[in-house]
Image 1: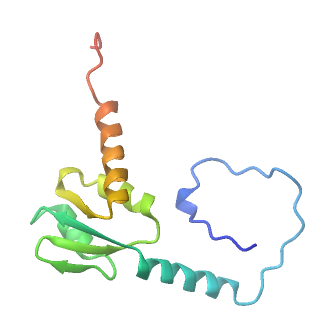
Image 2: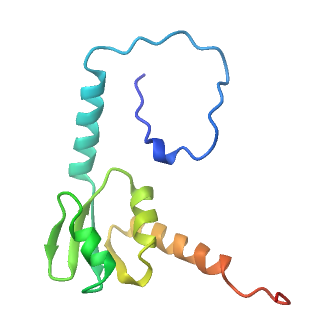
Length: 124
């Protein structure tokens, strides 16, 4: 069956697990895949609050299809995990208001960053 993979999500070397028969790509497959990604993009939104005047405000407000209402932004995305990565990079400049899953994913990333930089007992 056809599959769509976001290349950014592949983080290791790719290895064939068994010989594959040549695969003929049906006419229009690329257009269909792009249409599906556009459908996902249009349907998947997140609501965040940004620190006024921050890098997060400037950059996120310029994302495609973003709506701005004061310090709250509605963002479109195609992948919740990728958006969580991006939002975590802004640190305290962003608070996720909705959906709860995205807020949890961002929190987990920030906690991993905190833990990776925590003082280790006995470390110099």
